[in-house]
Amino acid sequence: MRILVTGATGEVGRRFVPRLVQRADVVRVLVRDEARGAALGAHEVAVGDVRSEESVAKALAGVDAVVNLAVAYRNVSDEENRAVNCDAALSLGRAALEAGVSRFVQVSSNLAYGLGRGRPLTEDDAPLPGGPLWGTYAESKAAAEEGLFALHREHGLDVRVGALAFVYGEGDPHLAYSVHWAGQWAAAQRLPMVHHADVAQGLMRLLYAPGVAGRKYNIADDCPVTAVELHQLNGVEVPPELARRTDPDPFYTIVSTLRIRDELGFRPLYPSVWTARDAGVL
Image 1 (tube, helix red, strand yellow):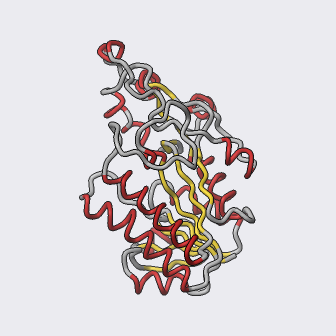
Image 2 (image 1 turned 60 degrees about the vertical axis):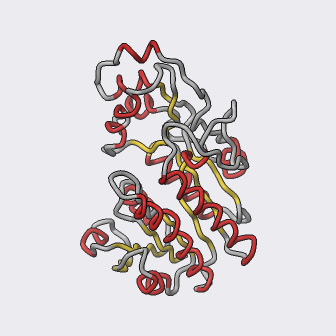
């Protein structure tokens, strides 16, 4: 397959693309900076913006599959959040359909589920807006999922969605950033995690699996970590007020991985962040 990856120079993309290159026949990246794209080792580099219909049309020429990693999250306006996470994703999906692309992997987030359900969240749960991490990002990711699945139902686009837990590892600064909001949590409040190596594993399983069009899969490790542990991992003193707080929604953001385990054979290489720490891959 010739595979187009968008968002290739982001924190997930620049760790995913080199792994994909080892597996795929041809990997093409759509990037705004040609030099940064070439540094990833991709076979082909298309220069442009995922928000540009002209750039997307050129990048899709001759492509068999798409992995959409393009994302806008922190330190961007609500308008840019929606433009990249939802509008561009749907435009890319429509363009892929017109170009005859056989598979479309959309990368989403566990935050798009919103509030907890008193149990681990499953892929069939509809979004329930709310909670401390809900915002334009989560809303736009949920809208993109809904729109792309509509393209599948109504026009036959082979969409597969991977909903990532909190991504960390290999020098990703997200882990250090986590204490900014974990400091406002209760001590036992949990965060589901997934290492970059397992993000790549999960997305490649989605990409290559036959017969999973229109399916969504949660991608996470086996052991969510608490607010206390997030401070410990970052070598930061645990604020004493954490112990005096109560977690209002114990299953907030906590996902089930039964579907990806049972249907696609996913087993995390790093079942917990502590395993990754011991392996020296934080």
